[in-house]
Image (cartoon, rainbow, N blue to C red):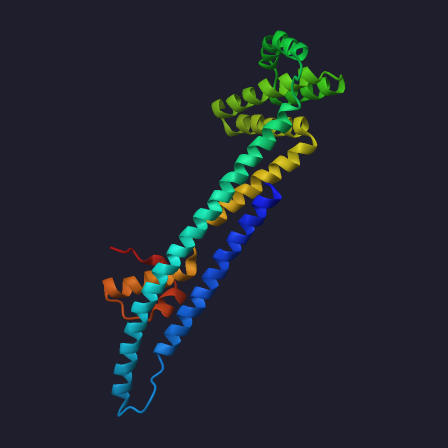
Length: 249
């Protein structure tokens, strides 16, 4: 991910977090204020009636604020996802260029690769997973860059096929581990960099897909109270986990 893309993405993620914090504070303050009865009242019953009216009005306003807040969050998420898509595209281009540099680069090298490809595929088909990795390492030690590139290319494909077609977990695990090791030795210093980039992008994607729980749970509680006739305060419904078990009609 480029520095510019990461800065834009980080900024947008911060805006999402700040918006959620500010919204939750506003809603909490509004609900707290709704519980306070100002002025002189004639009785506790009158105080309770006023308080209930204030809370009903506050909850109606909270739902309006929630809707506006969710629209803002959705817009920010869409913006952040756009940056993430760009970052993934940049990462794919960087990966392609990095891996391309490991393969044939001249007409002569492509000719040599073409003439050897079929024979290497046939040889790899007779080897155990660990032997494919050993054969790759031997090619590297021998200075056979084109041979190593072909072994990685066809060996990775073969190991993937064996993993999918394996009759038991042991065979699948051996093939999969060999494929991982083949990637690691082939990419060399690039392996950790490419792996970390993939993990970072995956983590950011999950972060954007994760719901913003604070406001959403309060809104779900308020809706449930109205639709299902629940009389508990929304704060208690959230705190006690009641919202998590609701099946809204």
